[in-house]
Length: 540
Image 1: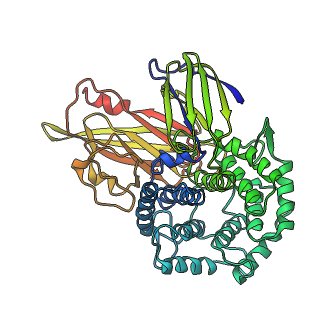
Image 2: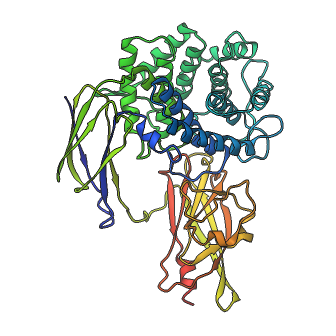
Image 3: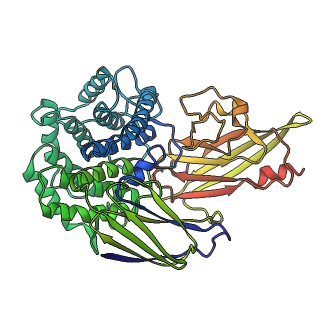
């Protein structure tokens, strides 16, 4: 039997009555992701990379289920439909040369094109992917190779940290080379061979842990075991090991969970993508233990690329250790009493969840048997918006009111977003505007802003994205929030957004709405602002 204890605590400023908790059990570490193939991130989306982050996990989960003989016709149909629709949607971001860009305009993005190419090459096992489009993208990437063998960056990247400095030549080239090798292009191919020669010149530079982990995976795929061992030896020396959990971070000062997940996942892929021993699998299990603690309620992780790479690594691990046999019993001792779950070979993928009566307190978990069990205690609660601004701020500069008719008002809102942190600029930021009750956005004012869609749109609402300029006013009646995307905020340089709201339905005792500004790739970095000024106008 295995036992573990944990304690759940609610913050002091929790809103009364908002706390709730639940315990869920699955017989497969990928089961949670399988339950939420269309909502692993629960974040707004609407650009080329975010669309791929919705699409790619389906591929790795399908591969794993197929290898483990767990792929049922129903699961295959569901996942394949997601792949097909995601594939068609992604083509909106492709240019005639085969390159993909973040918003479908401007120069092709080398990193994104490689991401699409490696994903579509795997997806063709399950859905139709036009081989001509794959070849176009491959040729376009090859044309961006320098004489040195490395690749030059094209297009803008809106995540400064998550890719661990992917804007530098070595990291970008490692990512593209990994894509080619995953496509089963031989390491003797001239393009790949030259790229590996360029990368090999950097193997002794351990200043970037992300790059080192990615290089370890690349040389594993290339079959260069000597270089692989050299890189893995260094990675082991800087690993963070704690009670059977193993992970990595970019630097001692780096606290980005997203980046740590991605680094650790590449190490896991490097460990398991060659012939491996029982010792390798034991080491890998320590990484897997840590990765599973980072999963969100839906089976994804905190952002886009960490979710994709982590699920790729977890699916590889799961396919290697999968056993159809074995049963286990999970017992959870909570302040309100015991809960018991049975996991058998017949219900490995069954999502079992029970609501906990006591939200806070000490819990003990006990697992008996011989089967695998994934146990998660989730906690949900609401807290008031923090009063202090972070390094990002958003404020209402002005609001105006105009009468369209005696029963309809038009309110103009001007918002200023600013960044004052240590970096030169942020990653891509999201301005989340909660609409006041009875208000809808004026479609004319939305033609010049970048709108991205929430994952779970409300009934009767057609989601809009940056590629869709046609907006139907009446369909916004039930929208609760607008998600406006800015490429980035440059330090000390504010970006203003103007928005006009129509009051379609008069509402008495109107409460202020909340505006949130946050970093898409580091959601913990945010700023809140209530729409006090706008609601006060209604009282005049």
